[in-house]
Image 1: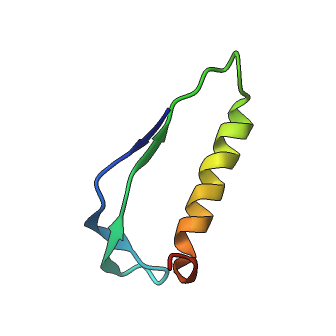
Image 2: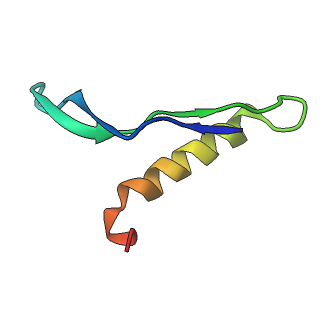
Length: 59
């Protein structure tokens, strides 16, 4: 089961250590270890995040 939180502006640390505001969303994945390996679940979430960060694909 995939839980998707509210999309909202939140404080974030930049690469140079400064603070900025970024629009973020929290994801939560629940799965049964008897059915799926944790590596598969982590790979799924990483893939989703990677695709969502490619804003040129949104249109």
